[in-house]
Length: 570
Image (cartoon, rainbow, N blue to C red; front, side, top):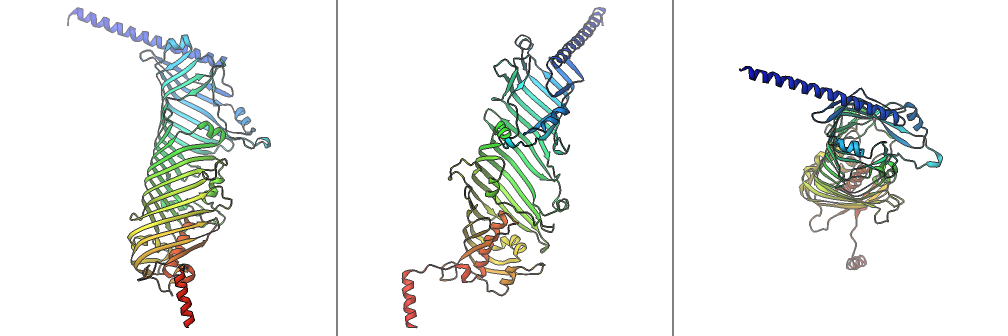
């Protein structure tokens, strides 16, 4: 290598070192300026009721980015204590930020127009504690609800625009301020927020309100644990789109933390074990301010696709005889939340119910596949008309994956005595052995043969009793009624053991038998048990019932005349 080339390389190296040194010096100078500015702002414009601190500020001249390390925003204890004496409930944040990176600042706008225009904000290792504070109710303000501000005060600025806001590996906890008990937690929160604005209120008082008309927000791997430590509520992805006013959930899961066997060890009394997966949920974006300030939730159409609903109950666990579950129409009317959902649509879903008892080694199993549902007028608003206050549900699918069925429920929410009506159909032809996994554990009744052609039922009910009619068309039924695994007396078995079962309905040359459904509700059980026992009463009457349990055919005038003639002859 020639001396000239060596000199050039040495010169280039020296220049590079000088440039790097200059860049580091400029970075240090700018970091110092930013630190001074932040200290000055915090000193001259302190945030009321909060303490703010940070460890250091760094700047990178090459990509025009600044970073803040170990930033904290902590509400004062006196402030939190003072909120408990109010008539409101609050959610007060405490923020610990590991690293905040700000990139792409438009210096011209920042210095001349006092307008912050940022290309990107990236937050890492964010820890947020939401202190839940329940204020003391005031007699003069019984309707007080949780409040959220509609603006924020930032002095010395004219506006803020952030093109992209990224949150990585963050943690959020909901904690009760009084008991310090963690109510819910999420340890791996990631979020992406686009096109966020803070716009001046226009009164030159330093107040700004959030403008999210064109914004989108994405949360990944969202999860919270329920306070009873039995479930985890999670979502693979949540997307909020303010432009189209839509909210999407992908793989929303309500998941038990214990297996079916171990779940029973963590409960004192019997309760259902829920395992729900909703793969796709689409709903209008709710008005958060109305929800938190006025306790109102209004939605037009909620769409649920590809969902799996699994419910398991272990009846070997002691039963809580003090419980009095409400029917859906009663529960909706007693909600503290003012609810108004026009329509809920469910498509391509499954529902499975399993139950184990001491009476049988074989668990009861019922499934509904290809399930779809339409629920309308789910509302407890008092100002709705009588017609719009009727909650309707239409459900259809396949029982045990084979028998097509539909079920309709109508709840007049303004009815004072909480009445409702119901009807349904099961279509054949389906082998009755299909239902053995449900009928045998529930009633000790196993079908050896038989074909269901059609089942129809309709009736009405109130919270105490139900009544209606049921028609079951079938042929060649043979039942195997056993007590081998039964440890408790079963009324249906003791009745059926001495009664001849109808093998066909209709019988040759006769019209179909129509059974009467009637049931006195067990107030300790809910709607599912109420409907099942009502329908089952009609099934019993169809197979083995006498005249009192069957609907007698209406006699025509000609039939009445014939009977009179016969009576005269006798």
